[in-house]
Image 1 (cartoon, rainbow, N blue to C red):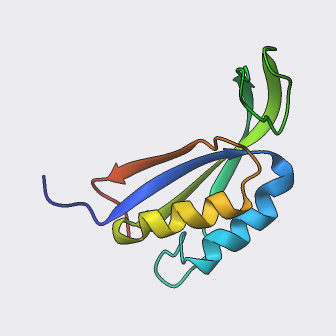
Image 2: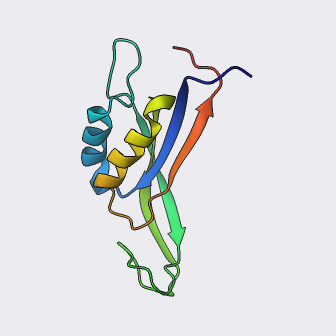
Length: 110
């Protein structure tokens, strides 16, 4: 398989943080597709986790199973800007351990 040029990022976070995340992604040019920028999609999901001893959770209590609504944000970025994009996301993300999945895209429509 040829080297991939783009990847998709999946980011899970509280709905209250969508605006700051969108701004951070725009600063590093994630979501730039042709003559458009700030391109992303999001959907509401239910998150579940249990903070363990030693954690400092944004939501929930240590040892208790938690469930809260959150957003799953999807955005494309250039492979060579992945580390920069992750750093930008972490600057505005409230979770101690943010979930940021980076998925190589073999083909895109752009």
